[in-house]
Image: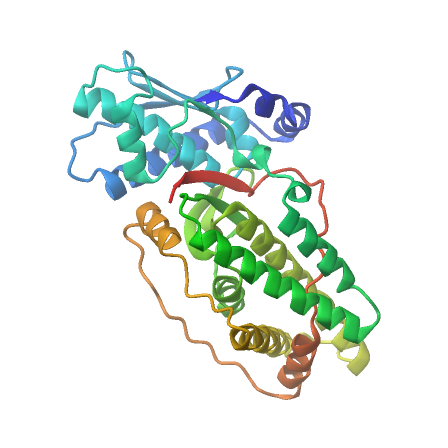
Length: 379
């Protein structure tokens, strides 16, 4: 996959500085290649299980101006060292699938065409990945929200949500939710196909508990995205686990990522404040308190949605997004988890805080691009 030259240059100095800080030795590179091999095997199992594809030789590519390559003559599949060291594992998997598509065209269909011709496009569509000749990690293609008039207005309303005037703040948040709902309904009614993105949200975790599931379910229920806890790899920590992936339109995914960060920051901040106010030293009731906050916030969002429904604004889901989601994850399994939460004083105190929790304006961050957007296909 050739790079978009403008995107390659963006953050290049920062990325290579980050690479220089990593303990890159042969042992770590070999572990990276093992994970790339697993990503290739998983993609073949998911999308081409009936085809007899031989694994290629995997290499880490240090060449400039490309994120990955497929060498038909020597059966080499290369992935950029910069991509592996500086961006999310979902970005890596996207590039692996792009190069796998070239391999399928060459070794299964033996198609004689330009490198990104019709057969290649069909193979990419089968996997639900973009078939562009040049691309980049989508965190380098992040849209400017100020250029979208709807998102710009939502940002202003969320800023009003910081107001010390409780009535003004609640009214601003309610208007922001209604505006987002109208925006998504209008997009849903448009005849043109939508581009959907897949974005890793948060770190790779070894264990997914009830709190993580609750947060992801809130995003799915109220913020116009699909969610999945997918298998991931953290190249920097050399850790495998699961990470939350958000799937949806770029603006919806961007907002959901902000809500994700906002909720985790709020849970920690509110619990520390509760401990101070109650003179609590131990964290025994932290789980109950946090669940109360999330339940209260969910109730607040439900009441706002009910108000929108009374005004004739009802969200019934996005069938095209559902199709894209199933295309990317055809073997998805739904698993229900049960957790016991003590509905004690800490829970009720947390619930009261959740009922009053106001979604704040996004906080811009300069902390790099790991775990951000990954462009998907057409809906």
